[in-house]
Image (tube, rainbow, N blue to C red):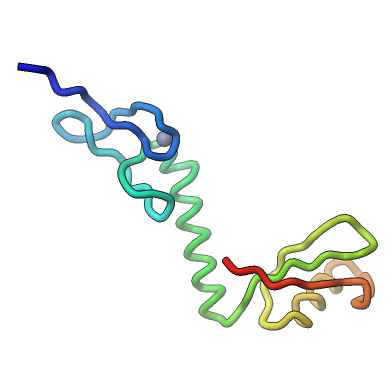
Length: 111
Ligand SMILES: [Zn+2]
């Protein structure tokens, strides 16, 4: 009888890994990043942060907030802010930086 190969391939890092079960074939659930199984390291470093981010995005959306990118013409830097309107987004960046609102441009991002 052929011996079953033990473990599984992580869908995220493609490394062979040992999980649970008779043949160590069960890994962690990689949702929302992928379908299948992922290793413990990917679960801790990629999947859990992604879930936290997804949860935060959902609660931000629930508040009616959108994500805006505000870039300041004076400086080569773009800020990501959550606000209800473009004006509010620019206002938030302006407050943070102390620059004139006239020098800012905002762009809405879908996420
Ligand atoms: Zn992995």
